[in-house]
Image (cartoon, rainbow, N blue to C red; front, side, top):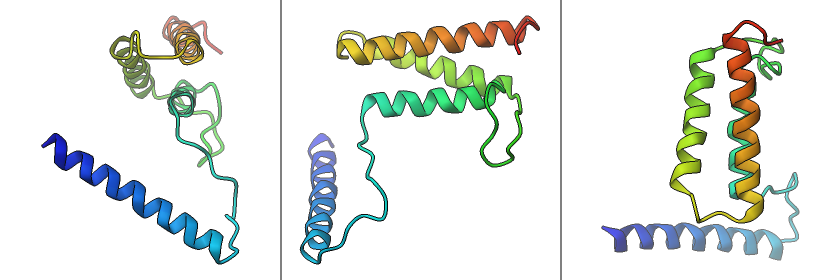
Length: 118
């Protein structure tokens, strides 16, 4: 099973690299800057989703601040699970980012639940 997964991952990477080289050879430039997928980007994306669910920032679709505390809790708890499961495997920056994001989101969540959040 693990060997099969490795073959799929490698095939996907090879296909993406081939497409990139073909575009480069044809002189095509990407329409927009490519964002590298990394742990920091992943954590930031989850933090953004939690902030939207907490009503801290406007929903980009509706342009309104909307609260969904159950969704916010799920995302915050997911970040907590990631913190626990990745313990000892993160760089200092990644660990610090995750720690800070969790602190900020948990603090805001508690404030909202106690009725003191803005």
